[in-house]
Image (cartoon, rainbow, N blue to C red; front, side, top):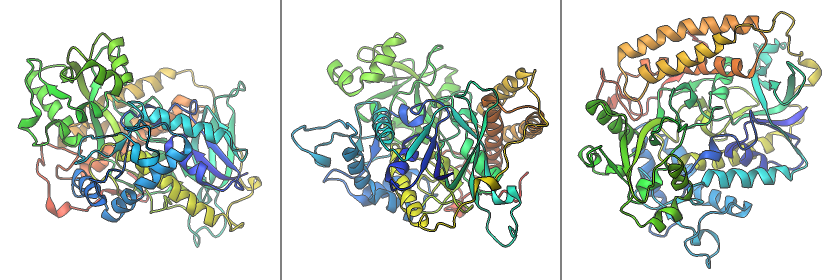
Length: 543
């Protein structure tokens, strides 16, 4: 029995764990190795008001502008005003941020870069591998904590709730979470499913960009937390807003290789094959427009000209500058035959970030008692219709700390929770091993392909309906398969992926306008009547 079960080991989950009291017994689950998540691969950095020429009001205004009328201004203000403190905590934790002046300690000596949507330099970074620096630093601190147990290669199957257990008087009491059933992939023993009972459960399992054929995310980004919370009874909001990063390296052998937005922040230009710039024609901010605008413009130019990619060029900068600021991106491009210091690099958009998710309050608490969600898994109101660059890691730390504070206060009530004896073991008595793995592989591939074709950067009513028809059939097929065969890592992810795909499609069908990341040819204009109107999916009205 644990006090706190954290599902996910990225910046959100680790920030939470490190801000909880040492008196609490904590378990952290990771689907793969602890560092194998989206945080580790984040390049740009974390935004905060750290320069004297900058201001909270400016950061708030930029975020609201990027969010296209759907941000919650109170949430934006809360996160932005806690930004400097979040960076200070990371510095105190030992994160090696790049410094402008090594002689100046603390926040004042940090080197700040600028990214799309920002009107000032406010992105603290560790060269071009900021996520790696944050993740490895926090992991090392967590490993030193005797009250924290780490479980690598453990994937949650489903949440355990009072409704599911049919606990008495549930009609009079709010649904409560008591932990999760978890598949242990680290064990040599076949089909090892564990019960993790906990007084408080936290979903910090990341986003769902793996629902698309092309993505910058690691393989584990299959929307597990969103799907599990939906099945458990949580409301989900704004899933139509899936962000596509404008610049991933285009190469037949390059998988999920992101080229950080900071390259454009430091003067990189987007070019057509003939060397012509095109962004200034579409937005006065040109290459530094918000990501939705840049990605949609690239997609338009590629379709208009029938080309496989556009090009990103920073070769006008000195080689020393490029190698110093972007050592990892430079090395990655060289690996695939491109020298950033001498030539433009081919780039295409790819699915990058889930702006919607589990609805939570200012402390990360969901609709279910005892269940929290933080990070990319959530809908907080910060990102609106389009996330501004480098606000995501900021949200992870701020909400990780807020959830830790709330849990710490609630944990003083010893009556919260349930005894492990009241939770039945996972029942595999009616299932067998599957001899049709091809079903999983085929369905996985089909979902990702039709999501890319029909529910991608540019949508239409007909495309969405085609996707809806396919996902409804696949959901039934996957449910039947799930009922008859033992769970595996791939089956769990496929089940979650299908559920998330359905939520994205149905959310997109409900929004009859174009706004931020949701662009449809049938409703190309933004409807002012829908300002501050979120798309909320209620589990009571399932399908």
